[in-house]
Length: 193
Ligand SMILES: [Fe+2]
Image 1 (tube, helix red, strand yellow):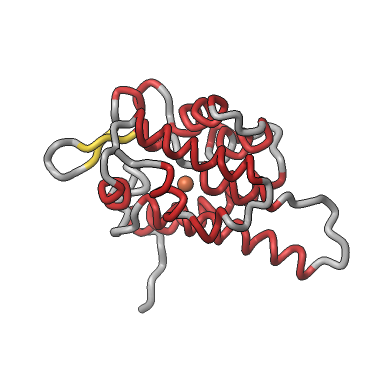
Image 2 (cartoon, helix red, strand yellow):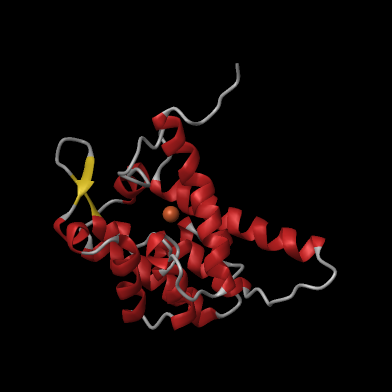
């Protein structure tokens, strides 16, 4: 069973940057709950899991993707803070990091091991995609609704919907990871000659 200590260790550096202790605990609790309800016994299986089933991940795993999105969203936020004399909106870094760590947590319910060394979509995943299942998990641990917005609206479910600014940053960081892979797969990613 994957416990809270393992999750705390895995995301230690990013969790340390969340100043609200309660929110930090809620992120850990949501991940632990998702592992338990998704039937994930070993962290190794979660690490090996591809971050999407929609295209060839080229070896990029679910945990690697979570880090890339968190660091990417932080980079986008810091770029604006650095470049603008005055930021026209406030960026909440607690919300940004918590949201980035949780944006795909629903994939622990959406995906399952197929018993042949691979991964596939679960019955749960056919019923609700990860933005919906992730939001439901987060609501159960008391994650604030603004952080729920980052989970619910980070993907196409959020198209043309109201969003907190942190959702936009997470969305862009997420698609910066996703689009090159889908484009590589369909031949539209231009490589070196
Ligand atoms: Fe993602």
